[in-house]
Length: 224
Image 1 (cartoon, rainbow, N blue to C red):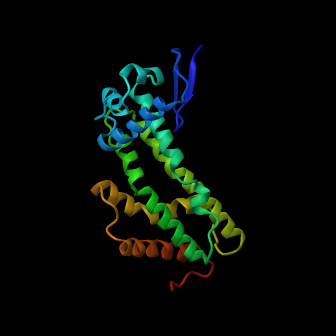
Image 2: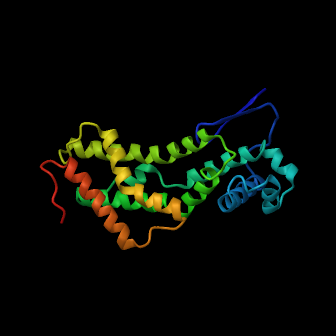
Image 3: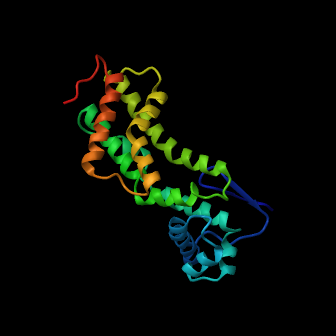
């Protein structure tokens, strides 16, 4: 009977070779080793042999759990995605004014999407020349769409309370994400470094929030 293993980003691997259960120390050791090596060397620069050596298991043991390097990559991404903060946890349940809430959301999302784990994921997937292009697109959708939907939920609440006037909330959510995180992510991707300073990130976020509220707050917005 074929085995159907859903991947973390909508992929599915079908195989008729029975594999071991996804539990136990050896499986976890392989996944942890893969996360470390893929994050340092990328998918293309990491071999199954290297993963086996780092996990201190035999190559045969790796293949007892996984069909190959691509299967290991999906398991590693799944593990990393599970470690990210939940979208609602990151976005909702904010206290303070609307502008303060938007600043906090922008700052937290920026810190998350330009942090070490995200840079590792980027090296694992986006920089690969051997992976199918659509896994990169699905990876981006898995990351960005989950937080965009949470921001949509936040904006719907603010619209219902009369604090924002928005006719197309999904579009406004995408605009806010683009304003808040577009430049920091581009900086991280192009330089491999974090945003230069907390002060400059705060200044960038202030501009993004001001522009957003000027567009969508009833009667406009005057920054403090």
